[in-house]
Picture 1 (cartoon, one colour):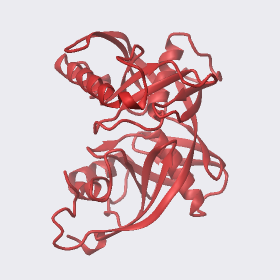
Picture 2: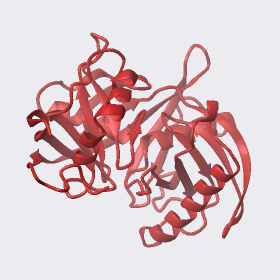
Picture 3: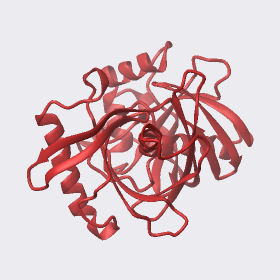
Picture 4: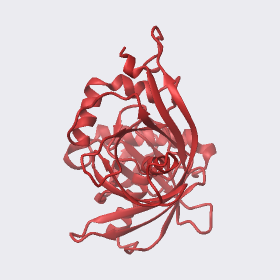
Length: 316
């Protein structure tokens, strides 16, 4: 085990309840080039680092890691590679807000507009206050509408397939009420849908795996438009309303003519936290979502991997 990887400096935050762990120092040398190429190098040669940071005993299933990298573009404040308990994420909305608030906490950026490079493209982030930010996400789109699945234990399930920085299957008719007490039942239902998608060979564009399942229902708050439950790739539910999932939802609403450009959409999570979202159309007609939320610093720490620790690379 390399001494350079034995001490890892991190800052933890949560965005509307969902944790982000930003890695400041102690990460692997991924070389230069695009963020996509560096992510691929990390996955191929340094996945033990991801496991050390995010898995127990140092992390948790709900946590998303964010490794800060030197950006490829001079106008970006940082590059970032997002990862979770099973692998890597092209983009993470709550994580991007967490990164921006962390950079402000460190004094590396001031309130205003910054750009952050991710493996799926450069995003804009407007830091409106010390703990508030708006992410202008990558272009999002509805790929297929009204896909019908025969799901064992659930029967016929209808949903849309959409891209919001990750691939989603969005179901408007949730199997039960979207409250935290029903999390086990919602998780089981989402896993059944995920398995049915795989069994029927239903994918995103280019054969991409649909690794997020999202249920929707009526909100608990009178000023919100919807409540959701999102099951992430590692089978942990999203405590926030999910930035990429909300982006995918906006793309589907736009596709159906149910939400106009600039119109406000308040998405509530299963724990009652919220994102305020809207979209604009780019010059070529693409949906460009904006997601606003709050993040708060939870702690600063130095993760240690001692020689001889049988779980130095986490409990897989």
